[in-house]
Length: 313
Image 1: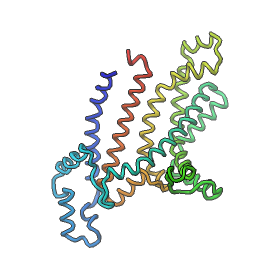
Image 2: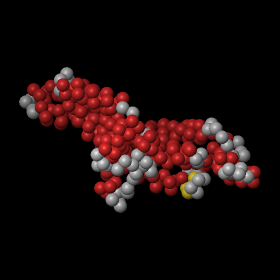
Image 3: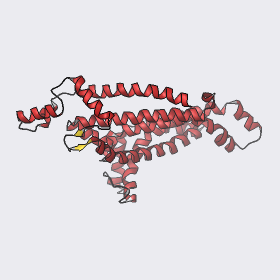
Image 4: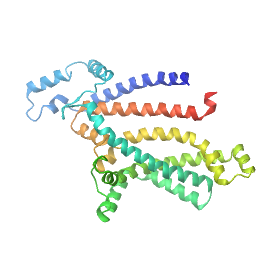
């Protein structure tokens, strides 16, 4: 276990290093001069010179990366030039919103995706199997922004059951919070549920044809026990890994959904930062998201290591 963890950590550190270079490098390729954009409409030369010196824009790119990376290693992701607030504080402020949205989406995806995958495998080549595959195809081919607009038109505009947009803290109004988050959570969970369904179905079909499952049936065990206790337990091993990685993708893939539903999370934060050329915020949010995704990848590997006895041997 310890050796496995050390091996994985040895690959994570250089990965984060190259990710940081990529994030910083791509940021430098954006058109326009940050100092000129931040100086306002007057473009005062003194203000531009001050901004260049403050953000090291008059120094080589490798030196600017050095200053930024040094701050990151000390927990300083920079400061938002528009809001005049540390990027770390902005992340901690927006993180609970996106984590709640991603958590609700992953729960919806697991409930619908895993259930549909089990049903499809157990009822192979029946109407239930075809219906589950249609559900998966619909989930994979439906754009999130389009589905979000349709849900707003139906449940907010026509029926008036849910708010069209906005966000309410669960500590202020739990019912209002759930009402505001259920539609965007369903939009995000819809496509991932389709992915989980396909993987669960494939894993279940493979496990159901295994010798130990046939032995369990030969012993006279109920089909429900065979499916849930013997087959599903082993089929969920790859699904656990996929679920952990999917949660990381949901954390970083909420841009369109949060924009459509006006939710103040990571997605809206980075969109506003791009439009305002708030480069420190863009770099900080992207690096934080990449770090979370890599960490979840490590946790998925550890979970797979723990539930798969062959890897421990």
